[in-house]
Image (tube, rainbow, N blue to C red; front, side):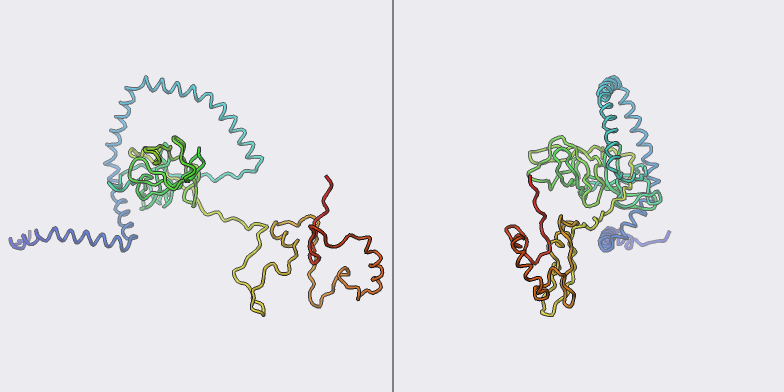
Length: 378
């Protein structure tokens, strides 16, 4: 042991607390300046400590299971009667479910339904609560080595629990749905409305940004909406409850305070690009300029029938495309003047009374090559 004088020891005792404060401030500034380093350091620490947390949590988990078994033994008679009542109720719904399943399979076969791919999942045990007073998150003993990725969905036995936000080598951090940083787009099944489920560090997340003319209904189911390609559609989340008038909250199905095992699903959601519609008029960002300085019109030189065909994707009835007259090209016989065929002038004059006028009410101008078909008699 190195001998230290009393004065130096007293000086070190006085500098110990300020040094720790400065070190804490430096670590905070480092975390703000480079979040990747902070996240990597935190998850590396979690990887090292996750086996230790598993050993520490194992006795408490066994004790909690033993207590729950003793508690269930004292309520066997009540649970048995409740299960008998539910079984009788489910027998009636079983026939309905079988009939609807067969009908659904028939309809999907007739419609050539393309089913969604089955997601892969990994089951992990909750080894620690890495949250605190102002955050709600858990740590599981599964990471990228097991197929877990950032953005995967974590489901408990009863419903949606959270999403993976950070991963280590053999561990992953899951942000729960009641955390203040959680924002999940949801769908209200009964009212057919949409809302945002916002966590507020309580056991019941709030429902915000719903339509003012379509309020959530008390007791209706809440599922994920799949908007913004964040989550798949239809994951059960909870039910609607009003704690005050005009203040709807969501009661989760999952027991967020008693999570022991979580299944992490990889749904591989992605942006679906819509194909080009057949009737869409192509619009280019760059247009050519004419000699007079004006921009070329995309519809210049197109007949009415061509515009209709471009807008709808198919030719209208009675329309036959014709070539445009260009300089130096030969005109069709129907467009040649009487000067080019003087011998037909008298014949045209004699047969003029046998034809209807060219322009009448409801017809197209003479320069258009499109004409509506004659209306049939009813």
